[in-house]
Image 1 (spheres, rainbow, N blue to C red):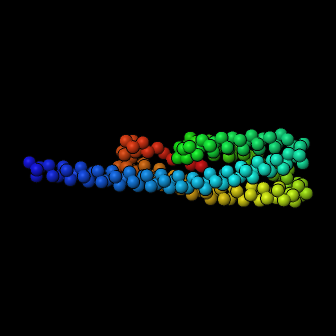
Image 2 (image 1 turned 180 degrees about the vertical axis):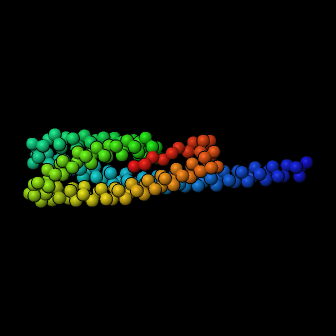
Image 3 (image 1 turned 90 degrees about the vertical axis):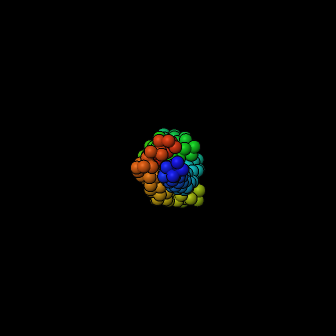
Length: 181
């Protein structure tokens, strides 16, 4: 009788070890996505601070362009709201997509303010404005790299959760798909 159960016990042990290994792999990939989120979060936060300071510095000299400055401030507020939501769940596709959309809106309205500042060399010469502009002009390249790393980590996680037989575990252990920036 024990001889008849031994193959089944061995199969169950093997299945349990596979499940444990698959769970650990998916968990490690998810941790990599969360780790890749940290620089994205930090860079968007730094850009937001520099943008807020620049808007304060530009309020008086560009008083005639208050609508453009207000549009940037509103777009930055949307980015901040989306960033706060994404901080709670950086792997969730909906929160990451909302952040990406808000960031695209900010980029679109920011171009006008940047053009206005570029037309005024005396304004660019002010130390506070120059420092904020330096941060804001360096941010897109740094953010693009951080996004690429985040997206690659998310793609590796998504690929692993969609592979058979790990996909079977995903339904049981609720491995959701990671979003893309």
